[in-house]
Length: 158
Image (cartoon, rainbow, N blue to C red; front, side, top):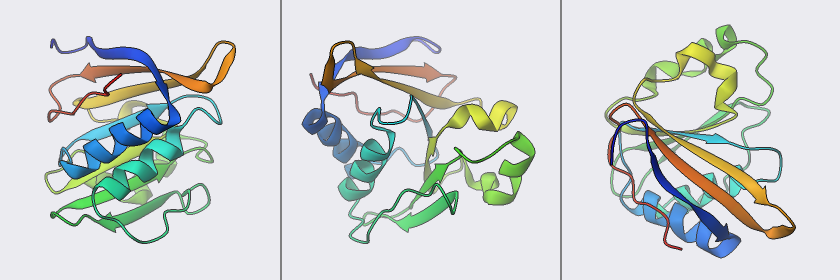
């Protein structure tokens, strides 16, 4: 798989999207950032919660839309940082959210609405683009793109 190339492109139903998330959480790529792009309702929060569940998070995992970031301890070690930048108006606001941990060794950062972070996104990351499949509201088009040299990520099955 080459840097900057699509690692996966396909269509998943919600169960397959959750399965993929749980597989990521079961073997979290610590030190990586997963940037989740897509419109409202595309499955960003569903995927983020599934990653947490796969990593052993038992606590409720509300959307961090109002708090902007939640942190969770993962059962096998490390932390999950779940950012939701929907309400962020400029990249300057991101710096105060514990952003220095994004892309570091003991944390997996899952970032919804990453475009709001602008140039603050780590150079090494996974861009996950989600969209509601045309004419099929029960399916999601998923495209996973490797940017730079992030830690390995399991790919969806399907």
